[in-house]
Image (cartoon, rainbow, N blue to C red; front, side, top):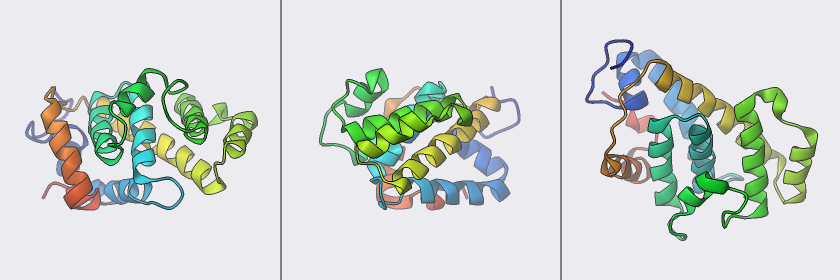
Amino acid sequence: MAHIHLSEQLPGIRGLMAFRPETATPLNALAEILLRSDEGLSKGERELIATFVSSLNDCFFCKNIHGAVARFLLPEQENLVDKVLRDYQTAPISSRMKSLLAIAEQVQLGGKFVDADTVELARLAGASDLEIHDTVLIAAAFCMFNRYVDGLNTFAPDDPDMYRERGRKIVEETGYVGSSPK
């Protein structure tokens, strides 16, 4: 049960956004900018970073919803998201993406854990300054989003079909700005 009175019909961050619509607007706008751009990182790579950080933070709702979106956006390789979450270093992703996930992993520990050597390895693997910037910002934002969702003990369904359908809807219909509960 959530720590505050929330609608159990709206899981995770959606219940929080319905509770406090004033904060929903800027939070959804931030998610839209971070996750729906194709400048530098692809949408699938952005969602993969969000999923990875949410997994490191053990945020069940965010890991599953963003994992569903990533799976929808990265369909070319079956079980890619699962392979990345199991061990990104051996997953069938580019060295650029592995190096960006290493940066995201350091951000998840704390901003001061990001070191120059890891950033330089990302550059050597082909990551641009924009991609490094966005990786750090996505990882930092998802630490906040994960703590928001779990800090208020929101409802997170077990049904994988719910996550798949919601992920499809985010990709095909609403994005994040249009996903605020009315």
